[in-house]
Image (cartoon, rainbow, N blue to C red):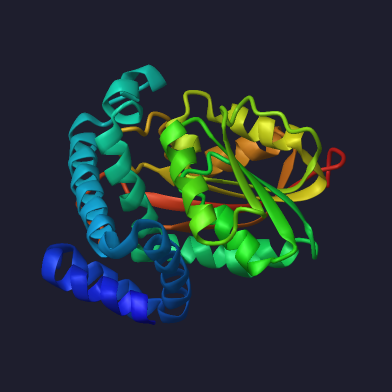
Length: 302
């Protein structure tokens, strides 16, 4: 637990205001938190070098401040500020400084937020045991590549193909794969997740927190189904009423995601909707992380 201790020690000196929620996650989800954090921090340390703690904490604090501003604006307006990819391209995806900070902020919140750790539990305890001994995973909107890394870590006979529209994200995830010794089993390429076509059918698929970034989120599920073998499993996550500067598709009901998945040929195997326990009751919107384990149907029923 050496890397986790270094991270928490640095955080206690440079991010005191945000530390209590991370400590609470650690106390409430100790086994999962330590398992996930130690893996991810090890990858980050190998990739970032001696300043890895500063880079992670700076990114997390930056992202947290931006999210708090966005959620407050969402409460005031009643809808997301941006509606299209074009609305956020220059300020977000084409802004190297923003992307670098946000990249590491999102990386940290995977284990720092308790409601995200609970979604991770669904991935580990339900999705992974559903998979065959070996196979190839398709990771659509791979971002930092963490879900490809996790899957190939827990399932050593698996390989993963990651796809992301962001050249910066693909560069970072590819470099991390190399520094972590996973480059022979995990590949990343720049491509649009809603139009990518593999040369074969994949045995399983993942797409985490991408749907809310898309103008037509149902197209993601449609493309995932077209790339997946019959009865292949998928793990999907989505943010509901959770405003961020680059969230453009607003979901208010869990059933909206379920309906889209079923329409595109999936059945729901398991799902879990998780929200921050400390979110004020006075707020109109409850930010949630929804996790779904899906299976591609071979006919109209299953």
